[in-house]
Length: 327
Image (cartoon, rainbow, N blue to C red; front, side, top):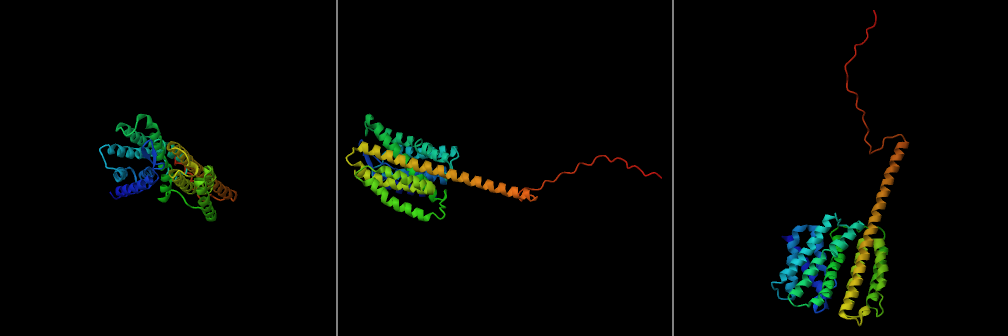
């Protein structure tokens, strides 16, 4: 029960934070990044499927905080609960690792946990708007797309960081902390410049994300990606910088394209680098063990981890009579 209440509280807090960056698309309020989906998937992966009532309770509390709950709210709650559950089941089915140490883990989180499973919540939410008459059928796809990408971005940007917080990944950067400080300083200057410059300079973020992924893997790349996405979303909400003079739909399309490309670059590149580092360490360990084995064999010694083989004595057979000495 405590776990369920904790998940509900985290979902509610993440939902209130997500509502700060809301955008109006065809008269429907959507969010470019919906953090509760990332909280939900991370909670299911870490705590297990039994905490799903906390997701439903948190979703209901978020809706109740912005509007008077009606019977149709249950449909939204169901869609927002089933989508993370499907994400969890799909990831568990393929053997997803919480540290995202393989490329297949990054691909699974993007295409199964994020883009695939969040089709449920987007279809449920936008479809309910059409059924209740709050949205025309011709405006369905614009709202559906914005809803879907916002939910998926929550999984791609928030879930990896939460998995790192609970200790699923490694943060051993060794003696590279001066480089980490330098990366943080560059990010503090470069990302606001790219987000708020009157000339579109958003492409300057990608070298920064690549640098973070190559040197600091998942932790560095995802923190840079989330920082860039938050500032760019704020720039879009205030229609400043690269989004100056754009319509609401154009702003949403440009913003979601940037957020999606940034998250994909950070997640997939960091998982690929982590997998290559693990492979190199395995090869180095195997070479070390082989060298130790060869050294022992050259010295004529028994390898330390190789148990001596005992040859079993033959089973005793019938004894032949001894010949007696003459005389």
